[in-house]
Length: 283
Image (tube, rainbow, N blue to C red; front, side, top):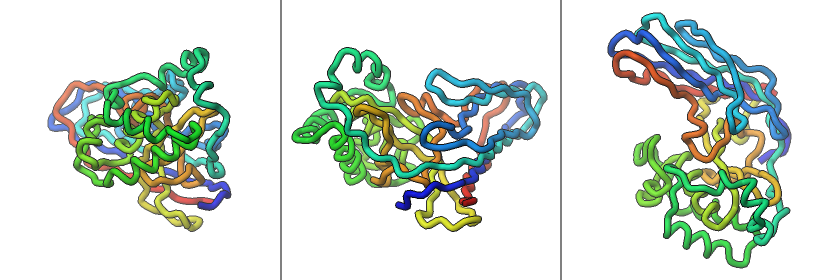
């Protein structure tokens, strides 16, 4: 993968149709790319049809959230998030902590939330035993790479086998899944051997040789970050380093902390009628 920076435009569109008019709707969108040491957010906006009132805030995990509500009756809702980001060079593994360092009380306390079990990332005896086997003879950052490679090799990427509510245990039993499952499984194994690890949501430009001004049908994507003396990311779904094609959006313990859109409403059943991600390399 090239090490040069990219400038990328992302347009994420989601549309819903309701069986009966919705009279009130309260929503949260985690669709704004991060601006940090890995990438620079140039511009971002979220527009809705019908228009809504909105405000922005940063959540506990450091993700920018756009909250919006709608009180006029409507049978359709469309949310379009448009952003331009400058992505960074390839992320290198951090070799800054030993296994003894990871067991230190101050490290365990500081990163306790990224070591705990969740509904999506439950304790799992078989995965834990496998992780301990992968740890032998390796430094922490080497174990991260080995575990990510193992998950990549053991799982088959297939849509429809798992769903948005599937856990790492479900995906492991099926030996199939999507990027969310690859990330959850990697997190389960890393946490079982004491490596703080968190879930990252974002986007992936699907063409490694993306041409300037060429728009591709991108995709929402997920990967992991591990702490081995410093935070660094890796993409277990593709078994590749995080690089210019990855656009970072949100971080958390698992998918529940980074769900792109969630909310409550009063009205008829909802059906998603449009979900698309268009990604254009601008420079």
